[in-house]
Image (cartoon, rainbow, N blue to C red; front, side):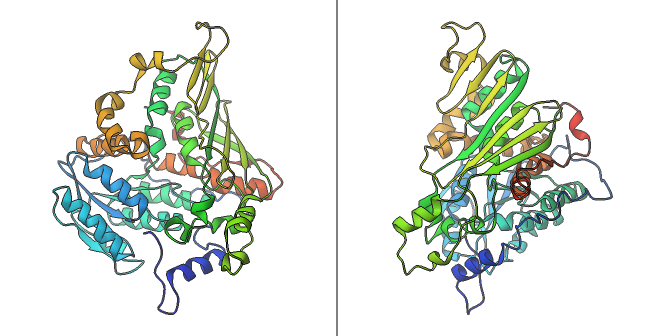
Length: 450
């Protein structure tokens, strides 16, 4: 769902702008309420619960804009996957996506384009096993909840939720309905990330103690665009101050540290610089008569958070999308025997040739390349979605559904990796005071698992 429908008197763009100024009602955190308690009743955990087997995985995709069609292309290339339904408030986008499905040799998918709630019809279909949500952030939670309530597993683009309360809502719904709610965190399937995960699990870096993660991406032109993500992604910068997009860097580091699998996040401290980047970009590129000059940006250009875990590990987490910086997720993990640091990729293991300096990652690839990349890496690289990680993610999800496997990531990961967003806002608003991170697993994190 690339944008949201409005009454006839308002354009979609006007409605989105009004929603932003009003405070993003669906996603603005309550800074006065620190950490909502978990639901009183604690249903059975979804940890370790496998999918039921499907000979053919039937997908419904909500949102056929840029990200939705990119994911569609990946899923269409996976054997045993059929796209049966598509939804977007822009009929032309659904028509284009439907053409991709037919061109791939699959039957014409059902189309849902009748308004902002038409996704509900897609979720009620009998020929949909898994719902993919590739929409603006405010819609992730309501769509995921509706999908689960109607018997569908679902996967949402990132972040899964923007408030602590909504993280709990996803967890509670997944447990009650016995449906998985995954976050489609493609960066966990990157080549380097999966190779380093194997290095960590093999003990090459020793006992892991510290990690660093980030989303550093110059999005100033995109944020001011009059189409696509420019219709909604700038508006959180008017009402929020913190890490708006924590999961791309944090997800892989959380995997290195076995978060929710023997460890968990416990405390977060956060601080932001002042805002300057969007204001400067507007001055240089936006005409003086534009209504964008009425906007006042609140989110600091660089947010830095520190997270402590139950096992005494630490993580530095950063976010900036309004600065002229080369793309960087940092992707660093340090252990008692060595350290890996990405962008560019390099590794140091105590005792290696060359002394105390970083060396190339290549010598480690033959022995520690992840089996998923060994198996489907050639196809992944040809498709090229974010270097191939998108196809590996899609292929692995379909494999888990077809073979009845436990998914690599679950609703507890979606909540834990998303919640630093609202928690960083709480900490910043309180002068960088520490805030507690909820235990969404209710103690289930203590059990080690893959």
